[in-house]
Length: 90
Image 1 (cartoon, rainbow, N blue to C red):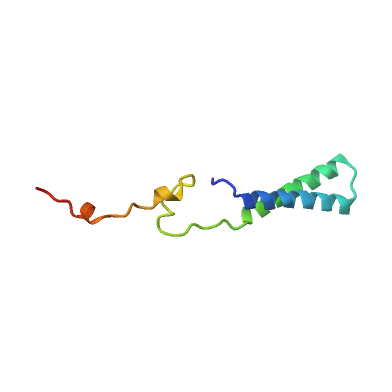
Image 2: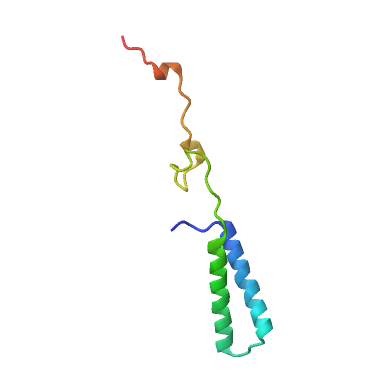
């Protein structure tokens, strides 16, 4: 499973916090069970939001072959010179 992006973490966390506060204020619950149910619902909603945030797509044909941790400079091929294409054999 790929690692979550910063946007997914931010949106999911914000959703959990805002929805928990909103549901607690609207329901005016004071029991432990009510708080637990609201917290679980907010966590599920935050998870749903985090998983549905669009993930940026890679561009180019070389991007598909590079790993997530590999810098882009390693994925680009070195420029070929005429001597590399046609070696001289004596």
